[in-house]
Length: 287
Ligand SMILES: [Fe+2]
Image 1 (cartoon, rainbow, N blue to C red):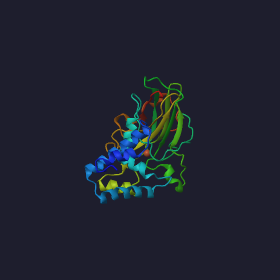
Image 2: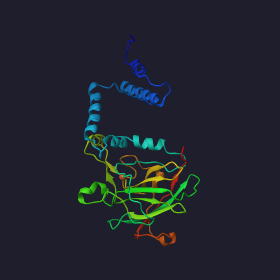
Image 3: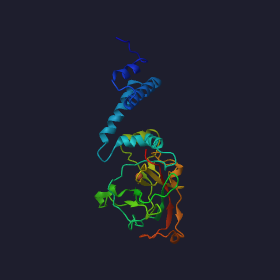
Image 4: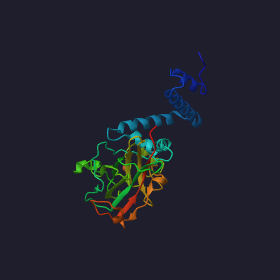
């Protein structure tokens, strides 16, 4: 029987799994065991600290529901979600950012120029741009799926008990022959991630706030291209340098400009905007 000590236990645990040599599963599992054991040795972890970790994870599970996934929130505030987005962004393509908890996969199809704001309070803004490939060739027929908070930082899906339609402030647009998309909406405001659970406790323990910089969410797809899930932020906006989930990248920050000379753009719009935002999405080929 091998004498297992605090240094040989790592290999013994890895050997206890009969994994396919060289498989991705084996690599992921062994890497996890290596790093967790190294961390435990380096920190000289006490029993109390280890139980604290396990109880924290238990609490995350206890507060989770089909609508609230506390582990995603934990991943977000620790920067893991952002790191996975960064690692999976293809060269030349628009950088990825958080999906967030409010995506619905069957948003209404909208015609270009529609008004997502639909009479809501707030600054009216024209959002427009192109979807192109990495050589800047426009992609007609690309799908731009968007959703956002309102001018008080609330998603209509959170306010269904107050009579809001969960499909409000979201829509799916298809780019025109020049790869353009355009619509009007209200400028969203910042909001907080949920901080009434264990992740909120962690934020408070580290003297951190729960605010997200205001943003527009997007999933952009086109045939033969790799889809992107991302967010567009606004220059000089509140929390732009301190987003609670590390979603902001310089390349995802757009200017909000006064809406002058919009007639020159030639868009037929349902709403009358006070401001405009231009943002182009770039998709890399699949594979
Ligand atoms: Fe969001």
